[in-house]
Image 1 (tube, helix red, strand yellow):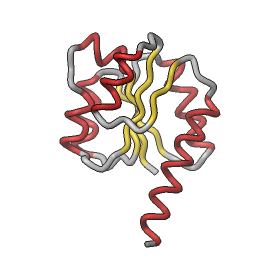
Image 2 (tube, rainbow, N blue to C red; image 1 turned 90 degrees about the horizontal axis):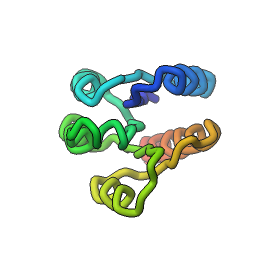
Image 3 (cartoon, one colour; image 1 turned 135 degrees about the horizontal axis):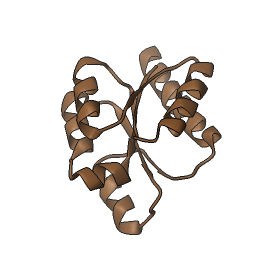
Length: 125
């Protein structure tokens, strides 16, 4: 499965990239929202992890723009600064999961497996 991570933290990105590789998935990393938009226009990502704090600071509607390129991709919102209003905003934009960081890598792996299972089930139908 093709996955995109939108996060500027290179330590976390490398760790996530390695974990997804071990699970049999390919992960691209975009360090900025504009890079994420460019990557999504030329790649078919099934799942995108978006750093909501980074997106909010840039003033970008990254989730809306990602949806414009890939309407059926699943998006996971990640944040270090949890608030009910941020979560509601992300949910209104259609995120399927909302992760408060730091989160155990196992949590991200569980989400990836869930999405992968959904996609495989849909293909079988």
